Amino acid sequence: MEYSIRQAGPRDLSGIVEVFVDVAKDPDVSIATAGEMLTKTPVIKEYLEASAEPEFPWHALIAIVKGRIVGVCDILRTPMQRTSHVAELGVGIMSGYRGQGLGRALMEAAFRWMRTHGITKARLFVLEGNEIAQKLYKSMGFAYTGVYRREVKTNNGFTDLLIMERIL
Ligand SMILES: CC(C)(COP(=O)(O)OP(=O)(O)OC[C@H]1O[C@@H](n2cnc3c(N)ncnc32)[C@H](O)[C@@H]1OP(=O)(O)O)[C@@H](O)C(=O)NCCC(=O)NCCS
Image: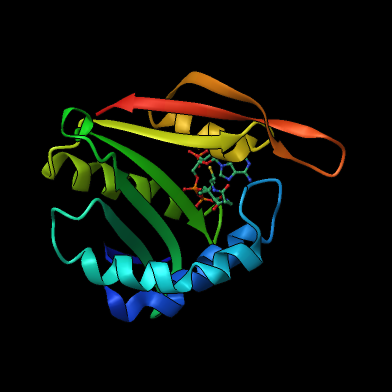
């Protein structure tokens, strides 16, 4: 499958929201609901505008197939000076485009972006049952470094939210 990856800007707003909402439809992989993601549209718009400045803490990379945004990896640098080498990642591929190498390619592009911008440690959060994402993260050098116990409500009770980190 042919794809391209680039940094996102304001014109990508609707495509990015579409990916976020699609991913948020599945409670086994997303903490936010699809409705919550939709309400974030104005904030994402502001972020996309502000992220033209390299100093802004949030940036997004997007994967594009045949002109359609089908994957997003967002990078959130932690705010304090002494932890400004650390960033939290989120990654999501639209259903129908998964399992074809886009998630790995987006993360590799995110690593390159982070190194270029002085980020030397990546962190992410993943639901305990999301084995596909954990397999990808482990294969990319992430290790489990912590757990938020009973952090997320499910239909039957609660599930843990795992912390994974990698030094770049
Ligand atoms: C997790 C996700 C980002 C992976 O992206 P992807 O494009 O589907 O994955 P890739 O095709 O790049 O595959 C990367 C690795 O993921 C794992 N993987 C992907 N699909 C898999 C599947 N169906 N079963 C098991 N492992 C799988 C494999 O380890 C694979 O590496 P390999 O091809 O060398 O075996 C994507 O599936 C997704 O968006 N899922 C829903 C949202 C989500 O879970 N986001 C992460 C929240 S923390």
